[in-house]
Amino acid sequence: MAQNIYDNPDFFAGYSRLPRQVQGLDGAPEWPAIRALLPDVAGRRVADLGCGFGWAARWFRRQGAASVLGLDLSRKMIDRARADTDDAAIDYRIADLEQLDLPGAAFDLVYSALAFHYVQDFARLIRSIHAALVPGGDLVFTIEHPIFMAAAHPHWLRDEDGRQTWPVNGYSIEGERRTDWFAKGVLKYHRTLVTTVNTLLGAGFRLRRIEEFAPTPEQVAAMPELAEERERPMMLLVAAQSA
Image (cartoon, rainbow, N blue to C red; front, side):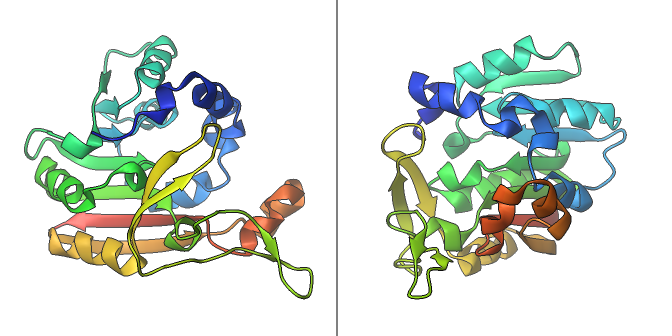
């Protein structure tokens, strides 16, 4: 079973104050880049894995999705999503992505934002998603970028010129990484970019597009604190299609 850090009261309180949780999708700088990867969802059945507060689930319905299944390990997340949603076509359930069990060929799109790096058995997860998609169905997800994930102690350093530098440790050594983020010992799983891509190909997906997200100059002008995100990629955005 995956670590359920989101039900930790300290973690949940800090997480809830993030701009992307207060402002929703508009508070996520990567959202325009994600939106460009998404297929037309009108009339489609969508599964949102790691749905959090339900921001994306509600957006999919506003775009005309026929139904949305939102899954999250955290009861606090699901309770908040249900409280904020008044739509019978959105079904929120508590589920562990390590043990994902979806009906076969039941979805046209599987979406996930910043959840898969908490899953240890990525290969099993991707096989389960492939089985749950109709032929030609889409998978769009974001994860922390492997360059960001690899650091043993993720924080900015200063190089000899005083420039901010992000450490990359043991990049080819995959497995557990523990970080202190709102709570101590948050457990994530580092995988190389090659492992991520080859796992998708091995499960029967074809890649549509990959993006290493960085804020645009316009975004940095509007939010100068985003400038450091151009020093290294924090997020990997992936769009794939089942064969």
